[in-house]
Image 1 (tube, rainbow, N blue to C red):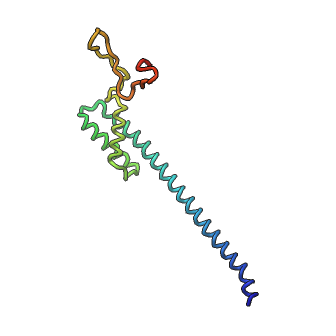
Image 2: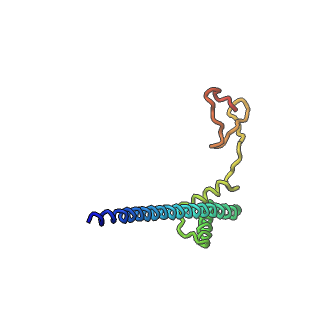
Length: 149
């Protein structure tokens, strides 16, 4: 009886080891497949955003000289981008994302003035003041005051 128990111990150990290895392999394969799926989703999203930006730039550029109001141009550009995305198989794109891409394209287009500096008459002393658009101003260094230009 004890010999049967002693002889069964290696068999139980072997079964436990094989079971543990199988569980480990299944978890490793699951993690690998999950990471590959995430990588594929990331690549797909990157491709979608890149394509959407290109189409938005093209749509906005094609409407620059159109005889329409700004809202009409924006709506037309949004429709063009949405149609192009649908034709390429991107059917689950949020309209807000398309509108954001079109808005970004308008901000880069000739429809939006983007000169770096504008000269305007200074209110006194007969001089001209240099007005720098938002986001282009040089930060003031607290050690130098506002004379760091």
